[in-house]
Image 1: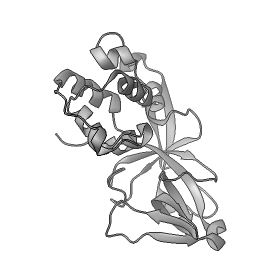
Image 2: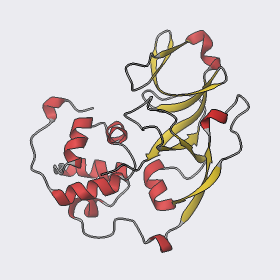
Image 3: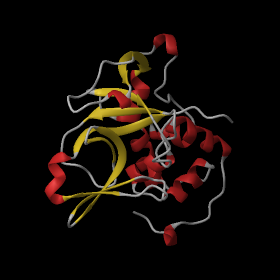
Length: 220
C-alpha cells in the first residue's frame, strides 16, 4: 500500500479521465484501491485525469482488464464490442432476505450481462449470481439498490474483503478483519457497531458469498 508521501501533483487529462471511468464501469474506486494497493485518494486523482506512471498504468490496466495501449492513448480496441455482437451470460438474481440456513432460495429472475464486462468486473466465469444491496451498511462498496455481483465461497476468509454471511438465520453484509480472539465484521458506516465472532463460535459464521463487484447507476 502506498503512503501519502508517495503522491505527487500531476496535470489533468480529460480524455484519460473518460477512459478511466469507462474501464472502471460499475465498480467502485474503493474496489480498485483494494485491488491495486493504491490509496483511494490516488485512484481519485486518476479518475479526475491525472496520468499515472508507466508502472502504475500497467497495474491499473491489468486490474481493470483493459489493453494498456488503449488505456494510455485511446488507440486500439478497448475490448468492448457492439451489444448485438456481444457474448451474453444469464445470471440468477436472489433476494437476500429469503436466504436460510438451507441455502439460497429460488431466484427472483434471470438477468443477462455481457460476458466481457462481467469478466472485467468479476475475473471468474463460474458460480456467479446477483443480489440487490439491501442497505447502505457498506457505503464504500455499494449503496441500497445497487446490484452486487457475488460468487459462492467457502472458508478460509480473506482480510478486508466483503462477504455475505448467514448468522443465526439472518443475512449480514460485512467486511472481515481478523484479531487474536476471533473475527470482526465491520460495516463502512461508523454508526453501525462491529460484530465480534469469537474464535469458539467461528463454526456458526457461515459465508454465503464473496462480493466481487457492483453494478450501479447514478444520476449525473
